[in-house]
Image (tube, rainbow, N blue to C red):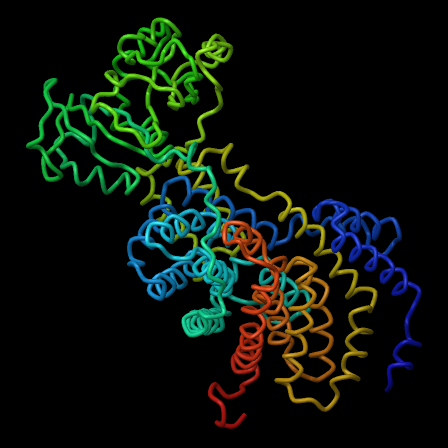
Length: 613
């Protein structure tokens, strides 16, 4: 059978589908429309053209991959909202020492482990400021750390089935074709091998990484990591009688003690081992997130709010519509040179100054005694309607929402327990994987590890809709026989080749296509071809489909191939050629390891070279 003969077998339905597919590729590559909108346009085109019936077209929304991806986003949101991911990130920063090599050796496996059960872009975004500050503090080049971190996040998605949509789609495809599906840890041996390869490569080939300082700019002006505020331990607090060290550990390293007041007197003799007592006032510096977390912590209260909140004339027993905002003291403001105590903010503006940030200047220990200066950034607490006068007051340069995000640290153990039980339920097959993760997502919200509004915001609707929209594309490719047609053509090219070479061809096709398409779209388009090719060769389809999905996920060739790469592009001052220079040799090695490992796992090939098979 030759290629001209294969082309003669093409039918009208296949021509129609290929035209729709060409349009889909144009939309995906040109990005004239958002990728989720493009997926919906393609889906509707297939229904109108009669390639799919409505039930088949809508099947993607109820598919297992779409459900699992949405659930993983919510569970990841719970881990972030309870401060777990931030705590891990801070630990990585501390464990990285001061050397570049140690930082890479510590960061990469830790980031890969985090990415195995959360979204890799979220992990990359979380680690970006941590590594940038670490590099600046230790006089290292940010560009030598950010690319290895982004690579580790991508490779970490190969450690479990649920961390990358491409693997979920591969599993869905295998089940539709009657093959045995993939378990959560079916691809873990491959993922471990790739993570180890990536770490060794980055440590040995660091000279390929550019040496640039990265961008810092003037964004530290509103970076809220040094707010001065005061805390009070209320009556019946869960922190009462517990040592200060426990509180500091719970709040993380974005919390720094300035002083300790007891019975109205400064107590320099009290330290980390000293127990907290109801009524103690702690003078602290905290980040925006820590400040918001302290405001929501039932065991602590912001002292200015506890003392002066009643003066606002509102009921302070319930949260109501109270919120935190930030305001900048304007040049020439009437408040310059006056202390917060003298201004009596709570009576004059019906709001409370809960925190103060000042660029590079010393302040008095007590917040109320601080004399305001031009450019001081105030954290104000009150009701939105009370801020109207402040917003127009000439004494303030701006009034904007407070950017801190509260961390529900009290529920951190609960969030970890939910993740663990979700994994156990899925692995032991006590529940089907989609139901296990859906139950985990519901439990995360029900236990208030993350509120319902934030849970919905955590779900990347574009990814969910795109997955639901491209699954019917794969169904149409199978149903019209297009996959079989293309597989027959590919078989003519690879006829007589070793299985390892065929797997490398599939990986390479996916690696190149994923540079212009998403990993999900690449897997959906090439997956059916891989299945048909395997069946025509009389072999199990699993290694062919998995190798295709691996090519779509871990091809580290260009900055546009992965969203994580786009995140670090600016901060690391990278150029397009940097990714090509680092990524091409690595991707060649990753391709060989992926093909070799899939052949070993599913086709009985040798684990080590030269051992037969």
